[in-house]
Amino acid sequence: MILTKLEIDKQVKKKNINITPYSSTLLNPNSYNYRLGHTLIEFDQIQIDAHQKPKTKIIHIPPTGYVLQPGKLYLGSTFEKIGSKKFVTQLIGRSSIGRLGLFLQITAPLGHVGTYHSWTLELHTVQPLRVYPLMKIGQVTFWKTKGNRKINYVNGEYKNYQRPQISKFYKEVL
Image 1 (cartoon, one colour):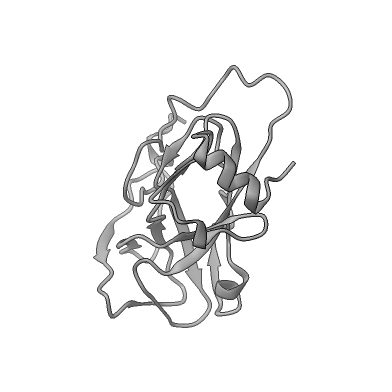
Image 2 (cartoon, rainbow, N blue to C red; image 1 turned 120 degrees about the horizontal axis):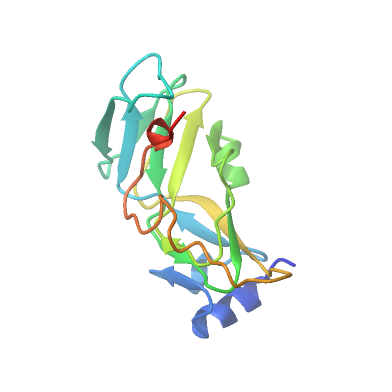
């Protein structure tokens, strides 16, 4: 069951949902708008090998914005730290952003119960697109769980970050 605007606000006030910083002006009927952080990671090589750490460059998005280029993968992060020990989070793009040709968070939208951090965002554009720090870029929904919730995502590899994080797949043993 998805939480509504009023329920999200109520659960934030009860501290069952954590969003920092929080503003009720960013609430939607069934979600909360999150904003793009100040940093991007751009992959700095034409071919990426899943078994090797990729070469990247860090981009600090200036107030005047930064133009994303097609054919490149960028990682950004939510400006807000978001999470809940009670509800499942799901991060998705905003339709307004999709209509500009930006694909956002298409492979990893689901967050686990127990996480609370800035989320890494996958960004890919079909045409050059200027993005800005703190722009409303996506939305997060909160879902009630059914069944045993004794296990929370407390030891995950991508937990507790404040900036975008590259894949750690290259560390996996074959």
